[in-house]
Image (cartoon, rainbow, N blue to C red; front, top):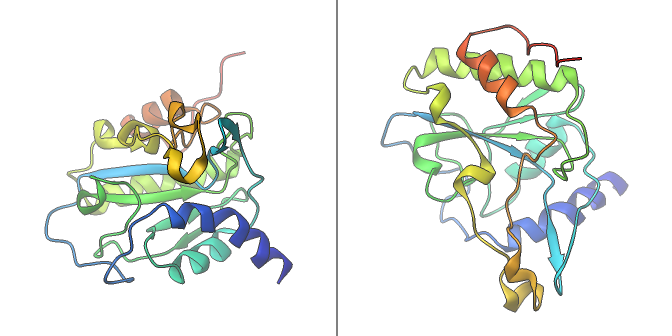
Length: 201
């Protein structure tokens, strides 16, 4: 119960900002999948012009189950720090995870604070890379160029009415954040590597 309460404290503010869906399971796809959007569960929040982040804990399965109970927001996969992968909505359904990209994309959430400092673990990155390779094998229209960060596709700012004055200067979606090794990850995807290249010394 204590862990569920922590998940609720983090996730409910995110859900409140999302429009409700008529079908919590997601509508069936009407177009081919040609994109993947990478998210982190954590990201900025704002109150009266002050931006802050929350600690994100929990397993992939806990978060996938949590999303399954929520109206208005959904995801296809969650990858946790230990490298476990949990499926949410089936790929045949449209998930609500990235405005304007939902009908063409698969959404993947990473358990991370999304603050640019919380490191993504090696097992997590390896599991994400394997998952992306698997998705591309099923959906060959997905190219390295159509794998995007959430921050690439959503540049909205915090609404003043909900978050207070000054928050409209700050972006809502910066995930997965500066701690994610994006260039190395896309290089590994492009070259179909089994793991990310070692960082330069």
